[in-house]
Image 1 (cartoon, chains in turn cyan, purple):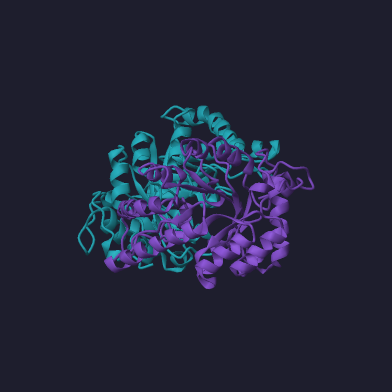
Image 2 (cartoon, rainbow over the protein chains, first blue to last red):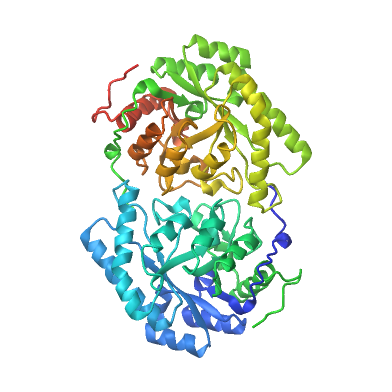
Length: 298
Length: 298
């Protein structure tokens, strides 16, 4: 197909660069301290952290580095993967998720993102997997409330339903979140996972007050062999960010907007180049800036 | 992940082999006459045809071959691809779809399957693509009614939203079909495209009297490079055919059930082996037969 003109991707959502967050996965090869320094260098006020990089540096040291860099932690990735077949696996998942909640609290993260898990190994029963997830989330709620951490259920693209997450539409995530107190459980909106949904605007409206994170990246064709990596910089693909962002904003979300790109080419690029592109595209596509990109507001 | 045991895929839908249809795409390398002979040889009472193979043999000759083989035509694949950027392209699509309707009528097909088209080339506007599809379907309705052909809107997996079909959930297909008379427009349910949907049972209930085709194949991990080809024989993947089939049946669908498998390995296998496997798996997974497969009812 003829690809849309990258310059044609311009939103009117008016999301300023003061709301930009860089998800650490976008610069996968950097450690936490390097990623924090990158954000500081590029005037990016927030960061989405990954637990493996936090563990590498140590939790207390990570929190200190982030504070010293003056960064806000927009999310911690991630908890979830609740659909284990055996009791030992489920106990391990429970312990790991409780540890993740404690980490999110220590880091002051806006949300702990949950990728809830695919089919139970050896089973075809979607309902079973979904019930296990609901039970596991419910089990975490008191701990999340105690530590003031909000759990963000991320609907993941249906192509990952079998092996990563059976919660694969925003509507389903909202239904699940609505079963729990709003101070403890909400949803994560990632354009890559939900852009295709004809009911997206309605579901975003229904998600009001429950949107805990808004993550953006583009859907780039053709999909690579590893479909996890088919993401691109804003404007390089086909997603119409304007209407999605407008609905997210209309639903009351005014938090940070994370750029999270899993893409082998992006990972291979110099991190400073990636950060500069992230900023420029964010300004143009989400900020509604002119052809050269809006001026930073932060 | 641990794959489910193939022998564990057993439905209770009680769909007999008298309702089995072989979609021609499952034996991609056979011409229409060879595919018809294969069905006759394996006691498969119906066939889903593809237009390129019909054209190859000629429409009249194709119809005669099918009649002579005593086969029913459960579907003709396919019309659609309405989302052209230019007026010439749209005119060509209109003419091609009208030709497809005439072919479906001549072949006595239960439905003409529509794969409606992805984003308009060069555009990111999903709503535009969806409106163009609604207009194009509406434009075809009088001709479909005149010739007694039912148009089957096929929701296609969201991973194909950008480049093949922006109608990517059953609910959306039902909404679209409901805008037109039930004698002219309905929906196609293909397990590969819709199995992940948490609202599938509800949407199938809502689709009552509008289900024009039920196509089955399995979702096999890992997805291949060309995600169009990630399909497998019933029981080789993770789809739970029992609940889906029960909902399709409860919605009043009692027509043929097409096995449609796009898979390079299946295509490379001898056609007689493929047909035998299709029959055996259909009996076991959809018929609720014993371990050896149910006895044929036809």
